[in-house]
Image 1 (cartoon, rainbow, N blue to C red):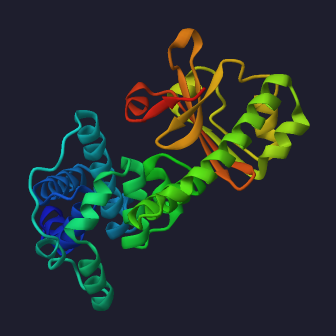
Image 2 (image 1 turned 60 degrees about the horizontal axis):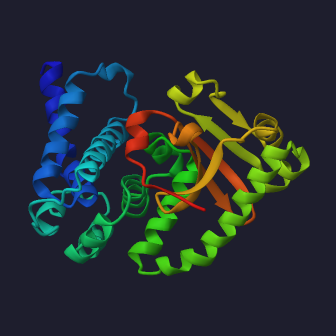
Image 3 (image 1 turned 120 degrees about the vertical axis):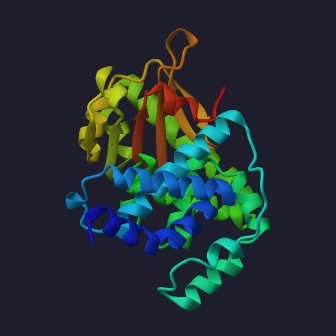
Length: 290
């Protein structure tokens, strides 16, 4: 058996699982099949000698394909065209754990898919991969280009919305605003101690490639390092709602140049992601706050 046939056989074994993953993310059987086909094309172009865990690699790739499709759909404000039920998709999934597969098939009905449609793409991916397929947040984080802590927060927010308890975000958001305002005041005023007070000791700052090209450090870890980076800065930063959570935008002359995605846990900021890539920023829902 040549390598191409070997890969095709291995992929065929995983196809049902990949289709199930894609359907739960996209809510459309035809789009799910497109995502699976694109995953096969990417596998065929990849040197498989570098793949240690084929199942994990395929799940990661199909998730990234689905994320791209969700972002394009969101930018076009399109809805999926078909409404096939989930059983048609789930029945093909490999029964690694039959009871869990049955529970998942029962749980993913059309009502849930309607709720999932309301989630931001990154929220939906984080929720589906973690809550339905048990992927760790360490594995999910690079797929949605966030920190593991931020991925956990996204999945938690999505879970609340799916369970119909998103109204609890109002007081939480008020507290987030207080923390972010304190961060801004300390940053602008060069108050290093004030910055340390609102930063988690293990806070992580990450900048995408465009933000790094503009002068940001690609990654910083720890409160002292992050506080030193922001001390005396943030003069042009303004508070905003970014995908429903409190964040910051750097908008000199009224033009958004960088979006700072802040992950707040209690009274501390645990993650800051600087996004300056125009394509990524175009996928963010940004509402300026007064």
